[in-house]
Each structure stands twice: as structure tokens, then as C-alpha cells.
Length: 246
Image (cartoon, rainbow, N blue to C red; front, side, top):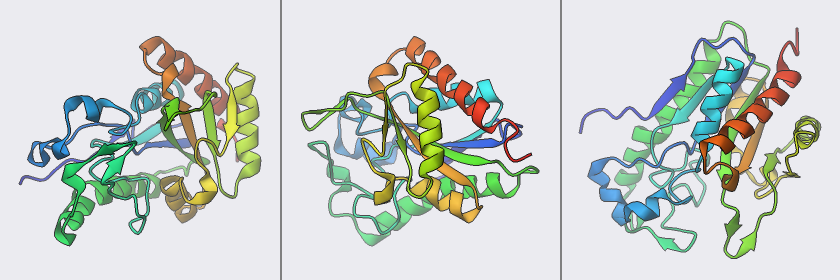
């Protein structure tokens, strides 16, 4: 197999003091994996990617002139937002859907996916942060969530996920709430349970503030919603981080 390009860096010379990551940007699966035994319809669901997350990340990147890094392949192959020891690094089932191509994997299969998709993403984040002339003030991971999971509604627009940096999370959330966005903290997942792995890993390594933003994908189904949401988030991030630390 030829070398897989598994990640991309958008606007690498961006001057704004913030870096974004998007771990679940794509639903793509290389042909050799035969869609992991799933239909195209299944892969297009939220189990295959974070719907709208890349589009929002790209919009914010352009609005702020920041840098963003995103994965080019589906989270179903391997989840770049999980520790290598996590039980859900490669899931055999997701939201009730059985994934044949993830069942009974050999160690060699797992190692191949780590080297092909996981390590290139995290190396790209490391290289971006290590080689910046001016270190950013913050690292933010952008994700989206499905409005209903396992029959339970999630009636809010954005979740701000954090572990140790509650003050920063609350500042961000309060400013976003003034943009007529319904905000929750550590919902629909908690950053205190290791579910902001990527942001925490790189944030701690480079002594940066870090958070994760989870966006209800119900407001990201059309380009108009994507642009409106991105503009609101970008305006708040500009207010918070433009010049902070000077």
C-alpha cells in the first residue's frame, strides 16, 4: 500500500494566537478497508465523523487567521481523541451499529492503524505547535454531537469541555451565551473523564491553555447554520485571545 496522507494543516502560517484541532473531521475510509463492512449511509451518520465540525473549524480558521489541524479519515478506523489504552480507541459497535471491520482485530491490524492514521495526526499537531515562531495562547479542539443519543435528548447548542481549566471554560461559555447560544459545561461528555484527550495531551506538552468545544450538529446541517455558528464562536475567541498574554 502506498503511504497514506492522514492529516492536513490549514493556514499553517496563521498569525492569530490560537490553534484549532478537529479529530473527527472526516468520514473517509480507504478502499482497502471496504467501509469496515458498513453501508455508505451508516458511515455518513454521526458514528462515522463529527457532522459539520470540519466546516465550522475551517470557517473559524479563515475568520481569525489561525491555524487548524484535522484528520482526513473516519473515527471508525481509530479515534484520534482517545488514549492508545482506551477501550474505545477502535470501536466494534457505535450507537447500536455493529462494525464488522473492527471485530477481532489482530495486534498487527491495530498497529497498522496507529501508524497510518493516529500517529500522523498527533505528529502534525506537535510539529505545528513546536515550530511556531510565536507560541499560541490556547489550543481548542472542535467537535460536534448528535442531538439525540440512545433516546435521550441533548437540548443545548454548545458544550464547553474542560478538566482543570474551569475558569477559562466559564469565561468562554458566558461570552458565547450572550450570542444566543445555549451552553452547557462538560456535556454531553465530561472533560474530567479523559474525553478531551487530544487537547489535553498537546496542551500540557506545550504548556498551553486547552479546551474542547462540542457543537450540536442539528445547527450545522446547512451552510447558513455553519457560518452563523462559526461567526459567533470566532467573535468570542477574538475577544478572548487577540492580544492576550502580550
